[in-house]
Length: 96
Length: 372
Image (cartoon, rainbow over all chains, first blue to last red; front, side, top):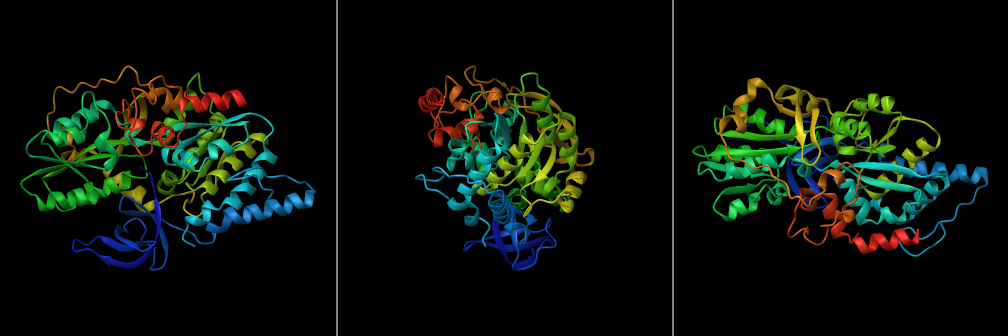
């Protein structure tokens, strides 16, 4: 139920009753989304949408962290001269 | 970036798995709170890839699963009233009450409608001024702001024909209940990313301090889960506790302030019964007194609700991480997604439904146990 789907904000408007709304594209499929909780979100930003509400604006810099941390780990491993073999994650066992 | 596919990359996942293998030296039991995370773990097979030292148990983070059976019975009773249009999220409709579910109530003539957003229920009430629209408002902190906005909007528009049947639950008190239980075996938590997107993670610091455990705010894609597990295991191995944030692209320490502000305007903290677990103090949200007119339980007198569970269902033990779904005698036999005995077999976030869907069956489990 706490599913949140990232989508690109492509339009911002107010609905007839004065609610801050936007049109969000999820890989081409668009939906009307309430933006009351993400007043900072601008057109072009990615927002996380849950039951028709944007609950967070995605931080583009932070979005890379899962990969940069990996790189740093790799550098650390190399520096320590340790070799770690990979076995079979996501398919047939291949060395990383 | 589209913030989805990138986090499903197999090569990066293999590297995280390597990092995990290089880090872990002894057995650890972690709990992922959120049912959405449970489903990712099983769908991508992460549960089977992890080093054998790491055991994942599945938490109570499925609002549909913990909604008390009495409330489902009340929703069914409300749906039978001729003036009522009963609305809810799709997941709620098939959850078994004492003797039936909402979808069956609909088949028998009740006006039950699924909505995507709580605002759709308000719109339905606006378009049907001669009917009473009741929204069965379930959810954790992630969903509560959306439900709060529905009430606030109805309040602002002065709508007399909209109300909610409230079943809002809060994550930190449930974690406290799990950690305080004498039979607890959880040593570290993956906290639910989207709950924290709303509430921030400052609430978890006292929990981490009191129980001296690491809590890692974690996202929902495979790489998020690998990194979250790695961060938690690393902290355990180094003897550290506290709160760390893996899901930094979406979650900040303070969370979503506008959402928290409206939550405070609309709701107050109340004691709440959790299905299969019992009453947890200060673990839910109820409407504030000034908005009590929007409380369906006050507006309608509904009598004769049974509140009876199937005696075969062990959902309570599963939701507290004491047992896994395939350890239930009824799993895959009396209880299947087509004929569920308990809510975790129904919901798209229920642990039993995940185990059934992704083939973690009893025989499978035994084979794994023998091999390891």
